[in-house]
Length: 81
Image (tube, rainbow, N blue to C red):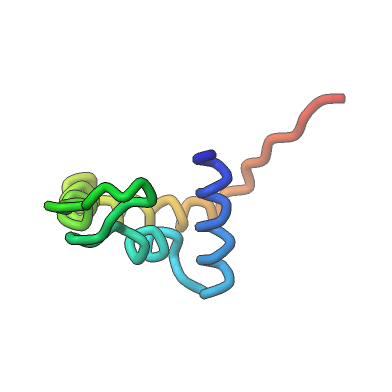
């Protein structure tokens, strides 16, 4: 199920010309919402956790480095038949 959900996020991001991370964040639960199982979401810290983890991992810089590397790298993987 996770792969299916992530593929939807990737597709939506491409259609909106947005980053998948922005699509994920836009769909976080908000304090006071309820889950599909009618469970209240309160308190809700997901946005704070997301921001903290991205900052502590230096995520934006690392992502930019990866994008830059991939733009000049000619690495590919091909199966042998």
